[in-house]
Structures are given as structure tokens and as C-alpha cells.
Length: 138
Image 1 (cartoon, rainbow, N blue to C red):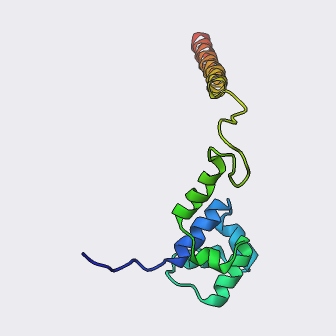
Image 2 (spheres, one colour; image 1 turned 120 degrees about the vertical axis):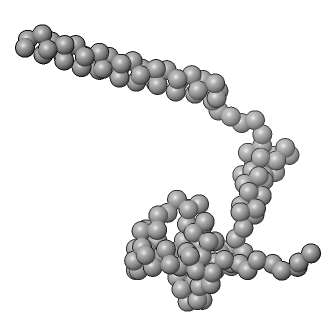
Image 3 (cartoon, helix red, strand yellow; image 1 turned 135 degrees about the vertical axis):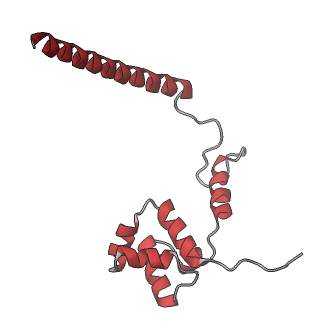
């Protein structure tokens, strides 16, 4: 059994944090004063120099340590604390605080799709009727 550990890929961590912050590469590039391609190169790099890492962290609104120590597991653990059963989560949300009925939302979406489908069918019928009229006139 090997005890070799995979090296930390800083670029992937930067990319994931950027995505979680709902930021596009172009926006990060603009914040850093570089091109989008340069951001892509950073995100594909296993290592990033400290000076650049400080700038990236500032642009992302996180610390350098947050980037270096980032892991998907820690993000999920953090968000799971919002829903603990003792009402002691990070925002004290507790459990079962859904403010809408998911079935109602599903039914609303179904009704909207049904209306859209009916409009599309009617548009196709109108096209066929129009084309038939043109053929009769010839």
C-alpha cells in the first residue's frame, strides 16, 4: 500500500472557489488586471507564486489560507451545520423550515410547461393552415 499523497493543486482550488462565488473567469481576470487566458493558465497550474496567490485571494474575497486549505468536503460539512436538529447551526435554521410546498411548485411548473406546449402546438397548426391556404391559391 502506497503512502504517497496527491499534491495540492492550487489552481483547481482557485477555480472551484471562483465557481462557488458564481464568478466567471472574465470577472476574475478583470479584477486582477489580466486576460481571461491568464486566469485559465492559473487555474490549470498546480502551483501559483505567493504574490499572485495574494492577489487572487483578494479578488475572490477569501484569504490565502482559505485557498490553500480548501476542500469540497469542508464546504459540505460547513453547509451541513445549517441544518442540525438542535437549532444550533451557523444561522440557527433548525429543520423542516420549508416555506412552500414542493408539490405546489412542481404543479406550477407543469402548468407553465403545459401552456407553453399548447401555444407551440397552436403555432404549428397556424403554420399548416397558412401553407394549405397558399397551396389552394396556386
